Each structure stands twice: as structure tokens, then as C-alpha cells.
Image 1 (cartoon, rainbow, N blue to C red):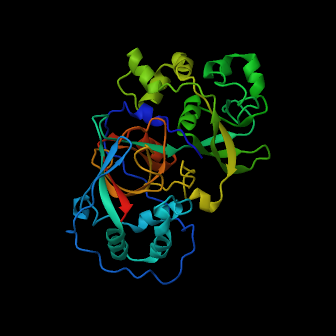
Image 2: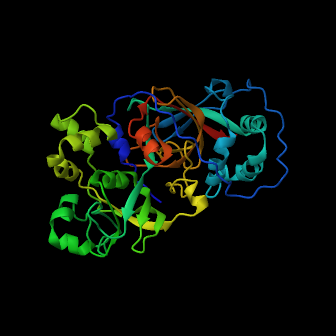
Image 3: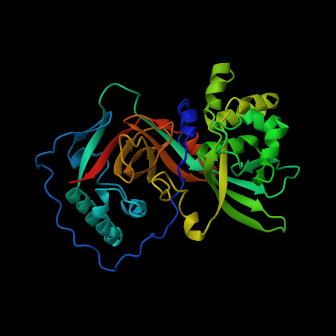
Length: 383
């Protein structure tokens, strides 16, 4: 899935807020069956060997450092990250592919064995811009979970659409305002409805995130839980509704909770707010098995995202599948942990820039909507 992570452009204007606890990561089953005997791990080498030369990648410099410089490396619960690593090994890129057999066997190793193996097999590099650029920044994204109905009713009338039949023939396709107001455009989408939700702002958030989960009331009374995944867009330019509010002088809080509060106080301007962003996302429906439900949607690497362990990056600076050490002190979250570059987005641009996958549901959305704090990144590259 090639998600477009537009919410980062909204949360880029956010103010800090009081601490919100990170939802506990769900227990998950490794995607790969591993043998019952862990890999033998030689002792970690002394952290005083000569460092390799710095590496350049596009507009990014990787500066080699010693493991002792990684804040919190001795304290991270590495086993919580190992499922994300195994997921990356489903679609590994060179040179990470050569490590995957050992990664799989190490899934049942102790944290000390995992840490010693990482020190022996990987070299940390601090990620730096080659020239001045944007400030290092961590934002967050999540997978919304909404109640929906297959047929419109008095409470749920906002449609989520599959791609129109002529999407590839007209680029860009019609704007959000044209979709809402033009009978001809509405006719082109007739029969493409997946389901209906109650709040147009929730539908917009789902489109910005690019995927989500629906609890759908079926016509026969059953409730089914499905995932809607990114299937295309109208290719209109993305405009931040939070940015629009700031330009209007309508609010000082352009976080997602702040946007919703403004909309509740100004219902007569809701349509104007929505139309300020002409971009519309179209979806495909996917079944959600028990295993699928333990992970997020597929990121740009093509593997399911892991709550608290997957990030979106600028792929020009960090290749997909790369293990990354992330440090981000802030009033909302204090993070020092192993994560994996498994996604990207049009707003995720710059050497030290990441979008942190928080998880799914309302609690995750509250964190993702407010997360904006400093960031340091180290890529962990095979020796």
C-alpha cells in the first residue's frame, strides 16, 4: 500500500500538550515460524574499534558513532520490536536481506542476546542533513476506527468511495467541492459507496490517514469489522484544514482535536472548512483476520505496520526496511527505542524527519493528532 501521510502536514502546526499515555502494544504472533533453538550469538565486540567513514545518501549524511552514543539502547525492550523486524524481512532490501535468517532465529533469544547480536552485526550512523534544512521533527499517525453502515440512515450519511471507473482517464479528477455539489460527478460515484459514516471530519481524517477500520452495520443486522485501504486519490493538491484555520485567524489550536472543537462551535462553516482541502482519497475494502487486526495497514515497504515500532521516513535518506534508533524527548511521549522505516508520505521530507505509527482507535488518534516534538535518528546498517 502506498499510503499518503497527509496528516503530518496538519500536525506540523500543532502545539504541545499534556502527557497522554501510549496505548499498550497488542500481543502479536510472529509472521514467521522460527526454530526452537536460538542462534548462537558471540560476545559483542568492544565499542572502541576504529569507526568506518561517513556515508552520503542524497542530501543526507550518515555519521558513524559508537553504540554508547545511542540514548537508552541498554534499556529498550527489544523483543517488542522483533515482530516489526520479522515483518520487514517479508520484503527485505539489500543488504538487510542477508540478516533475516538470523533475525528470525533471534525472535526467541533473550534481550541480552539480541542486543549483543545487533552490536556485532550493525553499525550505527547518526542521520544529519548535508546542508541546512527543516528542524528535526517527529509527528504521529494512526489508523482510525469508525462506526459505519452499508446503507445511509439518519445518523450516517457521509459516503466512503471506491475509485470511480474513469479515475485513470481524468487527471486530476474532480475536487471535493465538485464531488459534493455536481450532479454529474455524484452520478459517476453512484454505486461506488463502500459504507457511510456519521461525521464528515472523521471521513476526512480517514482519507488523510489513507486507511482505517470500520465496524459496519450490515443490512441483515450483523456487525462486521473490515479495513479500508488506500486505493487512489483524485490527485488534487493537498491543503491542510488546520493551516486554513490558522490563515483565517479562526483558531490558535490547529491540532486535530482543536479542529474538531472549532467545527462544533462553527457548524455553519464546516462545509467551507472541508472544501479548503480539494484532495479526496478512494478506498478498497479488505477483510480483517485476527492476525491482521494485531498489526496496522501495509506501509510503503509493503509490510504491515507495527504499533509503536514503525515509522514513515523520507526514503531518499533512509531506505525501507532499515532498523533505526529513534530518540524524541517531549511532553507527550519520551521515546528512546528501536523502530523500522516501513512507510513514507508526501509530508515526510527531510533528513531528520519521521512520522511515528501510534496504533489504531481513538486513543491513538488523540496522541497522533497532537504529536510534534524534537527528533534524533540513527540508522543501523550492516557492517
